[in-house]
Image 1: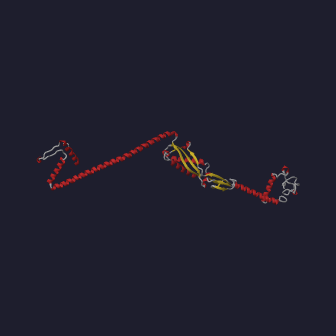
Image 2 (image 1 turned 90 degrees about the vertical axis):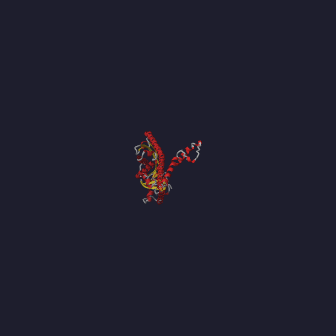
Length: 384
């Protein structure tokens, strides 16, 4: 039966009010708008009905009408409970309201009334409704790059009072630990600007303690490593929640205004180094040769010394032996010494002595006159 049907049922509405005795008014004393015909109930009537049902659920509703009021109250309680269940279901189903998802490359930070509460890893997680708790999703695996060195910010002073142009890049990411993500979100207002400022300061300190030649040649890797360590140390002191992955020293050169002069200096230094290398090579080849010749001369002198000493010692021994024989037989010894001396002296000459009493006929071969001249010479050489 329609709520506005004033016919039948004793002329009473659903709450027991007579349909012909209210002068066209609804049960709350108001006339229905739109003529009160067979159309559906108006908005005010529905709102009032809902308020009455809510009061009935909490024990504040009265009988309200004649007959059927108890059934209406039970139906209202059931409807309200159903609405509550539907709202709870919607809260759990809607993304970001009751649950949220964190990807493997991300970390979730849950805020309760705007204050940090916890950090969650990858997966599905539940939280309290949005007005109570909110979540911030942060990527903790993405590598971020900052390039420093454009313009005057790249000009730095070395330890040997030279100005160099430095271009370098910094690769960093969010610290994936629980405290790292929290610090990154709440301790640093502008992480990229902070990393750039600290990196520039760290590079200036490292360049200021290094020589120009070292930076331009063999020290590029060491400069990058020292800068990374110093940068990470400062960010840790700030509790910035940032990990420095790598510092790449891209360009290290003299300023454009003086680069020609630097090149001339470098060329002169290379020429000097080349001359030093050539001199060193010459010294390395000459010194061993001189040492060899000196050793050879030393050995020859030592051999001559030994031979002279040996000869003198032999002559002394011979003189002693002859003297001993002379004491025993002076005449014989004198005769033998005379003959040996004459043999040694005459053996070097071309003179031939013949005994006239021997009766020998001398034969002189004319074609061999030169032979006797060369033979004594060879004998003389053998005696020496």
